Length: 330
Image (cartoon, rainbow, N blue to C red; front, side, top):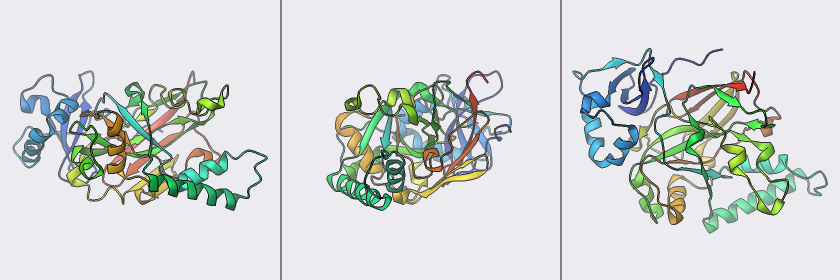
């Protein structure tokens, strides 16, 4: 089964993407739901323009993008025949772990030691209490990913031979449009240009260091293989998404629904995550902030990724991606 043709299904009057024609360089594109696109390099007369460059001038370019989307006489072309790339090349990728209540409970129960004296119900209650305390103390768990792990929303992903337990993690991702450093929760969303979809693939077998447990998690090894972060297809402006706290995150594996959860289950919303990350780091235009994955991962189902699998992921209002898994050397 081949990846599906790209679709311009998203909320609002327009979105941003990065597209390419066969054997031609990628270009930043304004896309409308009817499946028409504008090459923003030629439209704006800037031959080196990228989506990240647009985001760096977001306050200036957003009104212009609104005007272009409504211009029936602009130089529109069909999306058909174009390839959809990752919508932006970020300088930094911020990832949130353990941010969906049910997901954390499921993982903790799945990873219980064989001699754990607690019943499943006791373990679930204890984990829920820990998450309630985290929320009250305002302690999200944010770590850094590598931009080199990002790939397009319809690209094949190679599962490395060393990855014993490759898993899916579909997520809502926020895209930064204004630099953010030490911003408050109330200010945080002013720095978000829009939203997109990310699938934060993870090798569960290498999440925790076996040689020295005190080191804890090894996100470099478990999450940053090339192509382990399919991103896109579109960046939908924040003004077109009414409530990021009530979006449906759905992933199907070979047509079977595995993840289907509302972002209501997030412990920390977008504003809290952006604010928290900005306490330490300066978030830059084009950076992406992944908000964590809901319940329904492969560890929960006892079914991990393998050669030939097709993942279909969607988030309300943001479109859909389809990714085929290929075993290394297959």
